[in-house]
Each structure stands twice: as structure tokens, then as C-alpha cells.
Image 1 (tube, chains in turn red, brown):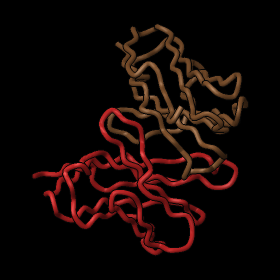
Image 2 (cartoon, helix red, strand yellow; image 1 turned 60 degrees about the vertical axis):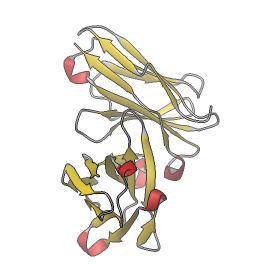
Image 3 (tube, chains in turn blue, orange; image 1 turned 30 degrees about the horizontal axis):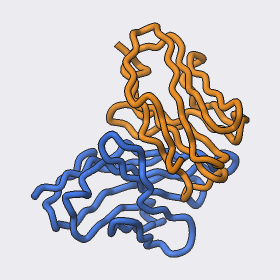
Image 4 (cartoon, chains in turn green, brown; image 1 turned 180 degrees about the horizontal axis):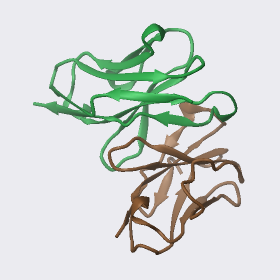
Length: 115
Length: 115
């Protein structure tokens, strides 16, 4: 079964600083990986996804993530944090085979951006 | 509508009470999903519908949980004899196709508090 581990339940950065949110996955097959963002009292919004092909994936709002098979990682980065980036971020892996409609999420990382 | 609509946004139930949570997916979306998000956790899969057929209910925590989508559009998640551990945000998502994660749209959720 797939699983996702997000290192750090809370990350705090200064405005303009690099954002790095860590995600490691466990999957028995080549994974489909996702990052979602959740603003307070809102649903999940897809930031980016990796399926196949280029391992560096660019998403919305200046975020990108790199799939590293050797490290089983899919860390999310943004060169310069903005106050509006403050939210909770979830990494997810899609199940394989017959249940490929199902997502398994990590526990989330709350990003705080300080002025 | 333009997005996935869930109602009510907030629900407080006394322990032992039955509740019904509603999800209006995007018109024409074939797939519909329910996820449960406990406080401080990532969303966890509950159940999946393709049109009116419930193809997977493996994530429902107990037989007190029941979901339906009788006409292949609106879905209702019902919880009977609510217990405190049922307190969570219940998220609904829809997509045009099975496994179409670019097309997953999440609603804002219903926050259920059992007192």
C-alpha cells in the first residue's frame, strides 16, 4: 500500500525566503504524486502533479517540485515566499491498479510566512 | 455550478444524533468522492461513486456511515448515531473521469462537531 510522510508539521519562513516542504512516499509501482494547498475554511486546491516524464514539475503560484526516485521524495519549493502562501500543504500519492482513483495524503505541513 | 458545493458548512450534533451531509458536484462530473479529514490530519478516503454506482466503500469507518448518489449527481453522506470520534471535516470531490486528478475539484467541506 502507498503511504506519504511529510517531514515537519509546521514550517515558518520570512517573506522573500525560500520555501521547502518535504514529502517522502512509499509505493510499489511508479507513483503519481501531487501537492495540494488548503487555505483556511476552504477545500483542497491542486498545486501540481507528477505522472511521468520530466521530473521537475512546475505548478501554480510559482511552486515547483522535483521527483527523485532514488530518494523516494517529492519536495515542494518556491524561491521567494509571499504572505499569501500561508496555508496548509498536503502531499498525496495516487493508488495503483484497480483503485487508481484513490489518493493517499500525508498529514500536512502548515506554512507560516512572517513579514 | 462552477464548483463543488457542500452543505451545511458547519454542523453540531449531539452524540447519538443522525446527520446528513450533502454534496453537489460539478455538473457532468462522473466521479464523486468523499474524504474525511480529522483535526491535524490529511484527508482519508471514504467512498467513491461512478455515476450512481458506489464502486468502493472500503474507507467507511463503520456501518453507521452510509453514502448514496441515487441519480448520479447529488450525493449524501449519512452518519447514524454519531459519536465523538466522527468529529471531522468531510470533503467531497468530483472529477470528469475516473482517475482524472487534474480534474479533481474539492468542495469546502462540512465541519462536523459531535458534542
